[in-house]
Image (cartoon, rainbow, N blue to C red; front, top):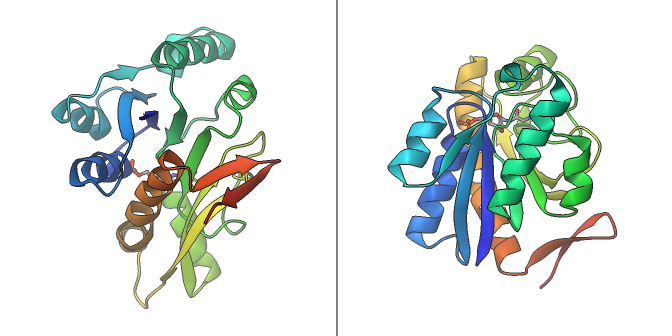
Length: 208
Ligand code: GAR
């Protein structure tokens, strides 16, 4: 059984897709052992509670120093002893130490086709605003292993989504979630849980 911890910041629709996937049996060999949010009062926490998953709020502003926040976050993770950490709309920069502690065991979902519209300042709705500003006709989502860089880790999977005439950032975000994110992330977790995907020598490898 792959023990996963899901880190969230807001709505938690990707968290919900994972919960639903486990329930429906499209994600197998997987158990969510905890949800960590950096924000109190978000819908993600309601989703965790409804699924009876232990949830924890660790909020940067409750700590005088960033280091202390990082320590509390890493300590909580260690207590949960995950095999895989899933950043599902977690909009906080993770501590550098986390990458060395969990090599090849952290994945992230990003709402664009990396390397477009990613890196510092590209998160949530902003990604779709920038894509529309640039006038791209195709966007999408990417699941990748997390390394020291921002959205720079080895890519596991990507799915393209059409941009349509009249799209607003909100409409585009919803289409990218429905057509790409909620498909890719559960699939990647199932692949990792069943040994079909792993990180080797800094690359994402698919075993057939
Ligand atoms: C999702 O679109 C996710 O891809 C994005 O935040 C949203 C969270 O939605 N993540 C990033 O932008 C990471 N750089 P959710 O809380 O409903 O899953």
